[in-house]
Amino acid sequence: MNVYDSDRMSDALAPKGFEASTTPDGADLIILNTCHIREKAAEKVYSELGRLRALKEERLKAGRPLTIGVAGCVAQAEGEEMLSRAPVVDFVVGPQAYHRLPQLVERARDGERPVETDFPTEDKFEHLPQATKQVTLKRGPAAFLTVQEGCDKFCTFCVVPYTRGAETSRPMAHLLDEARALVDAGVREITLLGQNVNAWHGEDAGGTASNLGKLLFALAEIDGVDRLRYTTSHPRDMHGELFAAHRDLDKVMPYLHLPVQAGSDRILKAMNRQHTADEYRALVDKLRDARPDIALSGDFIVGFPGETDEDFEATLQLVRDVGYAQAYSFKYSQRPGTPAATHDVQVEEDVKAERLARLQALLNDQARAFNATMVGRTMDVLLDRKGKRAGQLAGRSPYLQAVHLDAPDALQGHIVPVRIDAAHANSLSGSLLHGDAAATPATAVPELPVA
Ligand code: 5AD
Ligand code: SF4
Image (cartoon, rainbow, N blue to C red; front, side):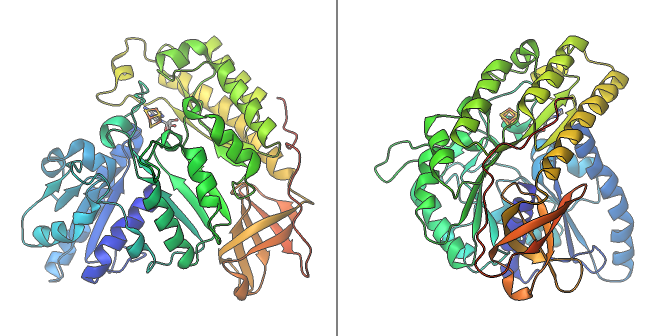
């Protein structure tokens, strides 16, 4: 989401003559794209701003002023407050106002310190790229497409419903137009984005609410769309047509990020997740019935208020039962304004740290074992970038693993069959299969360790 948002900011500023720079040194404008999801991420913004203060002063002396803006969810949550807490900041802009960046930068350069954090009211999607604009922007063969924004789930630990606002879905026709425009620009793989993506219920051509399964079927009809993914999903919104899409559409990649957060029913209830651990297990079984080679990724929180050793054991058990290809896990972080933050029984920091280490050891074992099952297999890889060495390209497997191989530059942007030779900590390496050797898709769920 943040990568996509940063791209949106660059796109909004390109007509003003701005180009993205890889370092702050020569830049005339620096925008921090910030995350509010955990305290650590939010606090980073202020240490980063502290560092930028020196650079700004230096620049002023050298007669080449530097403009500094803060964007993203910390900007959205703190608004005006940021200006007083960090005098170095010239403007503040929330995620739903990036289309206004050119004016904001101008006003900031004129000495005003504008703050723009209103949610759009009339056209809810005016801040998103429109199909016609996207076609000129070539960022490689894999692209994001925002289908839905905001979240109405109100998990008790989470700030997203406050920083990103209420759930809104873009109409199907807009999305199909944008997908076609992306294909015209050379895109082969589209990842549908949304804070709660599988709650998408945009209008279809007849004006009735559709669903994500139907959208996937419609997108798969477009020639040139070769791979489809969607993220991030909530277990409560996995419905019949989505299972059918996984079962019937080869273009839907056999990999799904389906966060469960915890394995204890008591904690799931306190988190307001609206499902039990067994309901999640049943969903995973149903997905694997629909698509036996599907691999799962997840998010976990340890140390939610009131979490006991027994609750935490239930999380470990769920992880063992499901078997994840990859996962993110976090210590619970108290977020201002969320119901869980004021809970009287907060878990001690050292208990959280110990639980996180145990969970991560298990998840890492599973990820390593999953990657190891790839060795010797042939899989389709979308070559989307140059590799580290000359003569090397890198790409992504159906399971989003990074794959490195020797291949001619001309193959960049293509999907090619690759034999996997080795699995490393965070990537795979392989060899290009020449001739017309077809990729053999995986047919079975890889064996995962039961630790
Ligand atoms: N503390 C820790 N992790 C959190 N997440 C969301 N809110 C919090 C919080 N307060 C995690 C969840 C979510 C992911 C994006 O971030 O696991 O799925
Ligand atoms: Fe946050 Fe996801 Fe829950 Fe929405 S569904 S409140 S984004 S954790």
